[in-house]
Length: 177
Image 1: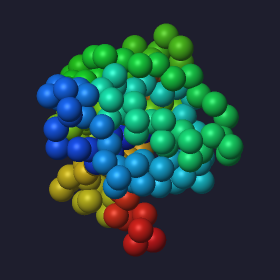
Image 2 (image 1 turned 30 degrees about the vertical axis):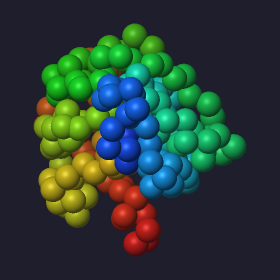
Image 3 (image 1 turned 180 degrees about the vertical axis):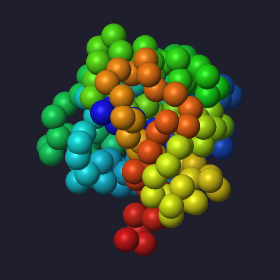
């Protein structure tokens, strides 16, 4: 079995001082939300072995804050910055996931962007908890985490419709819990 976690970057400023979209930083709410989801990950094993992060500033900050919230409670994963995750479409994201077979983590976490992350999550869902599927169908908001299990032995076998959505968490849902 393999576990895939899709983590959308947290809430950002509207415009970066540089004017480049890739340079947008997290706003205050984004800082809080990334930390809250990181704390959730730390309370909910299994933990990621490999983390692939978009090189956009907001994705890097999201991972850094999430990691700060979990670092004392989970084993340190291998972290790779992956430029191709920025503005990636579902097929490109799927290709990146399949490339993880080279290092063969049991749990893989991607930190990236919509619309590709949401579209990928929808395409991967082949079953799972009904309420989670319902929430995911509407949106993958900032700092949302979608967790899928796949009954496979190799990441190259990940395919659309084969994932079981086991958790769907947003900062809003965490506050309600």
